[in-house]
Image 1 (cartoon, rainbow, N blue to C red):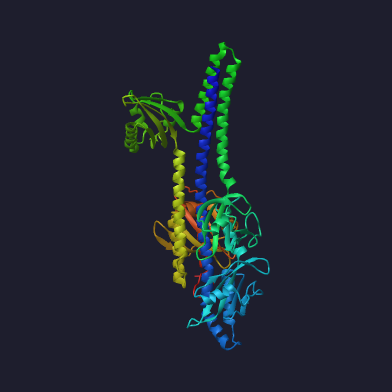
Image 2: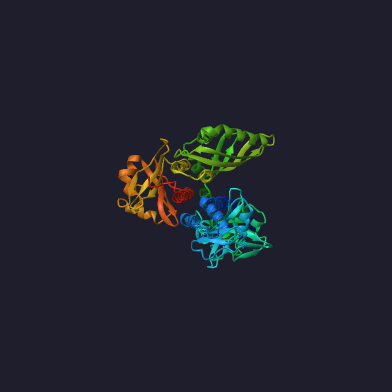
Length: 636
């Protein structure tokens, strides 16, 4: 008798351990899949941002090399070394003012530096510079490799050849970018809070992998950290050897990471977006701890019952057994409640069922609800009843298991919920179905989470496509095309974010307020411009613009930064939520892109805020281009 109880206890311990291990494995795989999807989305966003940044450098170099005054004065210099180069000097100084380069240079076709401007003017290029040679050999602008300058900072040069009407080279225009100020911060910015996440840019040099940017966990490490190509467990080594997409490995610290790998198009660079594995598994460990605690309680309860059996005499044996069974039943009820799970036995021949206490909570059955097949079907969603009947009939005919997910209308609160029913169908010797023994679980939260994940992926795809569409449009070259560019920007923002109103504002010359360059109303399909807002009337709002890149006011009427607009502006137009992204040029605030939502209060997601910042950066590029183009006038 005692041996039988000991065997049952051991079997229970093994079963509970197997159940806990299976639960941990399932949760770990789900968390890993979700984190990989998030890292891949961020990796794609970073790669797009890097490609856009790289292309803008190439476009700037090509535009300056085609300036008529540069080619004309270089041609004159080839004939007369004393020729005036004043106009060419003005052009490269424009590159400093308009685009924030650390230095701009004009070289002859033989590599002699003729002109220089900016803080790097005292560090000219050597005559045999590879980027100069590449620009002279090709027909398009080229970007060189990262290098550490004489002042210790990291730079990258972009060059484009200046050619005459016959296509012969007259010289080269070189733009020098301070990567530590204009590129590395963009790479390291992560759209969601994380203590370990970072983006690393690398390239291969012979049998080594060179880290091009400063790393989060090792400041000042750009171009100084190298890994041997033989360290194939390194995520960065996998990237340069051709692995693309999600992977596992270690980083430069030797720490296990989950990473997304991708090459940067038209370059020898590779982008690695990564997250420490410990951060990923933290949630799984927490859930495992909860499961272990519950299993431990159940094991201790069973062990206590067995110990009591040994200690008590025959007269108290049955009472001890009863107490142990009662405790185990209570633990089972608690476990079912935690897992939103219920047990059921359906007598097919008698057309009746009975179940655990938690079954009634899952379905919302009251004491008077009929426990029959028809009574069960009453709570099934009308659209899913036919599918449920078909699945059950197939399981009966196949003499197998029933496994189906469907919706119910909860009997108590009438809410729509998702359930997952699993069961084993027993048959008599003659093949007649007898009963189904199984379980039902409320999986509404899982289905909602999956729906939210798909919605987030769809939002990201819309945002990415919108940014690519706008970034690839031709730059404006006159007032009409500039106005049209701002109209496209506000329309893209309104359509992608599904808001009714989007407007682009710019500070006036005295910085006493902002003036509307374009307002787009999506429902009406119309544009307007010219409105002005005074900083003196709205000090809290204008102060907020200097403190963050994006101002997300879910409830604009109560948010301290925007509540001043409530009575005179928000209420008449039915606006409930605002998201304003600050437009910065060379570190200074020059304007704001305002997205306004009407209807119910809206909570702005992290990806929507990141998208708004990206749109503000595109607006900044339009404003910078307008400042450097005498044919464009933003003061009208």
